[in-house]
Length: 101
Image (tube, rainbow, N blue to C red; front, side, top):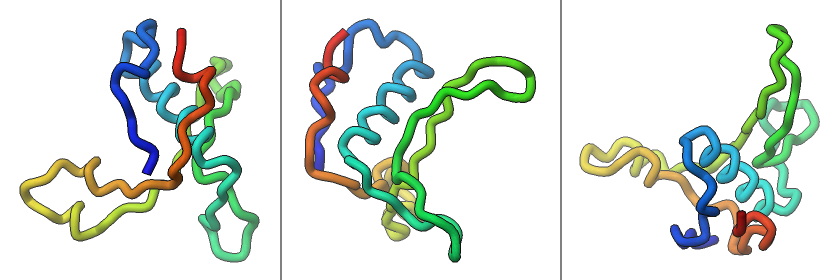
């Protein structure tokens, strides 16, 4: 488990969108190259990654992808939030450059 300390979230993150990209970059960092086979018979994919790409509407966009393991018993629990079913992907901390403004 890589524990999150809320005070480590950089103070200039002030929107949900920025929080999502930051969290994706932290997951990419702690995954440290781990991959998952998403489609049988194809090459593996990073378990978490953040990329920049120009989409068909000619806008540069951040693309956040994560294949996080889940506990289905937790997802189906009627008294817990769905995000609590997410299982850890690593025990390491994110790179220190992600923990400051």
